[in-house]
Image (tube, rainbow, N blue to C red; front, side, top):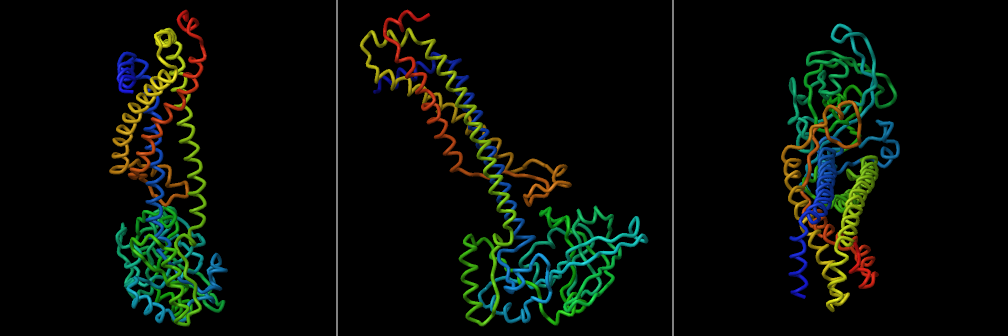
Length: 418
């Protein structure tokens, strides 16, 4: 066995051009696999982070009736006594904040804007004192200031939304909506701040106001539409939701707890589809590499037909020749995988630290990912290990057919091969 291994290594160094070409094809496939997987994984992790920090939180509490009608933002199905629920959450050491979501028409005036106009918006009423414990909007403030507790005439909007309507800090708008009970209410609001949120879906539509002001204008009488909860870095979100659901039921509250995955099913469905597409791309990359390796090995077998015939004539067993050629193929795969992993790691280092700026595309196009501009990679050492081993196995598997084809020839035919 040692002789076969030494001979295989010697043959790899003897046929340097063939070894380099085949190893190069494998290296390109391995490198592409690592880079593409890194980009998709990084986009997934960044999107989930931005979902939880700017859109859904970790958990959200609704009334069961509200959940069934949530797309219509029904104020009549609100949580009537949120203070008791918030106390339960505080006793359990959970960070939570009440919110009220409602739809409205935003009326623009040509005194501030280019022309008069009206557009539909979804307004999020927050408690400025507790919202920062769950969401991170204050960290993204671009212009002006954030909301003050009890502020009756101030709103904060997303930077992309501000660009779309031509808004600046200090501009006035009117919000026309229906309050709790069906009455119409209009109130003038001044833009006091603009935030540049990393979540593009939020940045395109964000309109925030103080929850006390909303309570007064909408006649909520202390009720809120939802309570959002941050679980930090807790990974088992579903178990935490079930545990909290049990606690609320024991306390006599007819409420339902939903995880961010329940709230972002459209995103998860898109990610599942995108992951399928990425797997197809990676599969095609490996197919291309496999075809390249197979053709190169087939050419190598024909070039070495007389050599194979000579070894068989000298008494070398077919099994040993099989082993020799397979070890050579595995050696080429090892070199290709090693080079591919090294180059893939170098490129991935740049992707993780710097990333690629796709802001020019994402500004006016919704790709589903919650990424505003820069797509970064993510380290996955399991992927690198799989890619390395796959490169070696791929080389040995695709070499089987050419080897078998060469070994079917009898010794005289091999020796007379031109």
